[in-house]
Image (cartoon, rainbow, N blue to C red; front, side, top):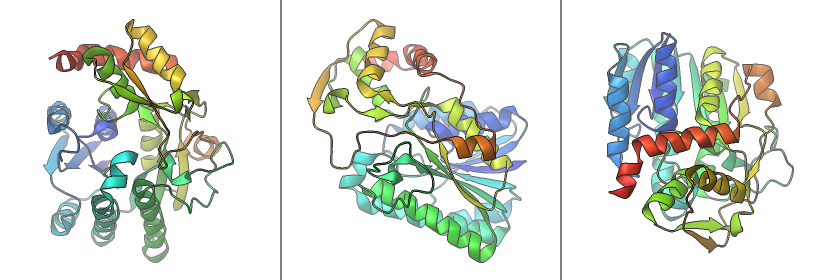
Length: 321
């Protein structure tokens, strides 16, 4: 299978590209190496992938319509895994314009490129943030998700809807995967798990919202990637599917586990929960089990242990430097 992976130098994208290569696929990655966080981190991910003979990285921006159209038209891709996006809830509140440009405009460019070049199947990375402050737990895909609390979620919901439109009009198969608090090696520096580790080894304070009394459906990156690969292999028409673990853990307990495993304390600063945030996320994963054969295998204890081991091996010198 030949797969185009957007955002291939990022956290989840690099893991996905690696998993596809390991099973024998040919992968072309597209990434613009922007400076939302240190581009050197993405460069390192790309360098690791570029050592593989069946991988090619293309440096480009999904907002560059001619570049996207040319890339898709020059190859015969069997599927497009669209993970490139401006991510992050808090940054989106201050910079909604770039989220609209990348997450909506860029997605339209890819949809048009897939249609014109005959790519039959697209998998779209969405987010549990589209559920907003849903009162019914666990979150079920049939929730209307029509009251997003911040621009990031709103732009991801727009991408989901655009996917349905292209499925309806042009027959493109389009699978929406709603990710739930993915963590693990190569994680973004703005993510909570990474920030806690940085705080432990650098002394920099990290805000602990609502005294840590917030539940998150922490999902280890390899489990998320398992679900993405299954979605690539199973064109389903148009479907929206949760990819979480289905077992929420209190933020305070998650932080305490990191501290326990490292034997050190983070510098935590109490902070109120932001209006853009929610007290709980919890994925109903019955649909993922049924349609994708999805079975998350990594417990939070095991996942945090692997994250800490990777950080101490690969990132701690930077934190101490």
